[in-house]
Image (cartoon, rainbow, N blue to C red; front, side):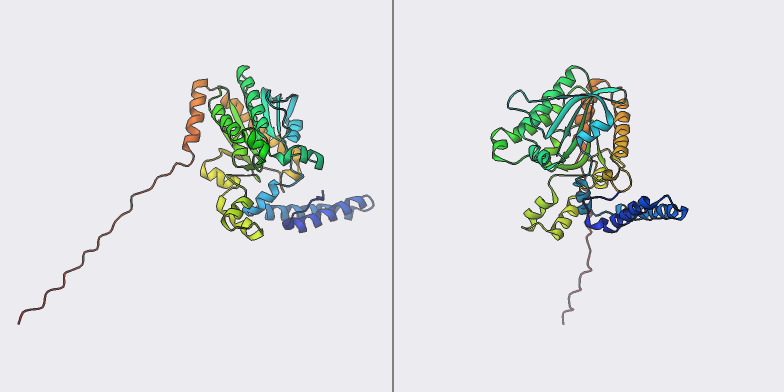
Length: 339
């Protein structure tokens, strides 16, 4: 299907998809046209494999931001049964940028917590484009503690460029809310799994991502800062060149995060990204979640919490070998003979 929103590196793919749509509208009179549609579909799939098999880090960021990419509410609709949404932080208000609720995923009753960016302009403004306020993180923590009370596992879906940086958010304790979430999640006595489904930016992502198992969708990104923010700090300007260099330096792709030990697994997306087949992306996500919960629910709780602590202590650990000092011995020059 042709995409209304078009990435520059997808122009030939979108043009091919447009030809497929046009050919399908003319199918019915001759068998030759059916062959053309099949050939065009194969051509498109080949282009998708080529383009998406060698995405640059900056291109990955742009795919993760695709407006057609499934968000938390989409995944809830595809994967959850009996979803009951819970609202409010019992202190200030309800933040639509964080969605919480009880649901069933597979055979498991669980709590779902996730960022929501919004689809329409009105929704995006209400959700602050997925940038949560302190009341969003406090809502998430209050519901997580409720899940712990009832012995239910927690599933979190991360998709945010970062926590909301406004004055009101800072006045209401943005940094403290995120820090408290990280502290409390590290010792919740119930299984927690987390998946970066799109953007995973800075503390805004970590506020709901302290988990026993952490995964990323193949075309998501996860980093301490966005490429634009990094570029603005290092080069004093954010443009196509500096954004690309920053994205590469940050090692923010799923493959890089897996290599660094920040995440435990990478969930494959449909050919051409989750925005091309949200339902298949949801099926892949659901299968991974169920598999992890089947394992984690067998753990004794003390062991579960200890393993979670050790998992995060391992991140960033490295060793430095002592340099080998090579001493070169020079033969002494004999003193000149005395006359």
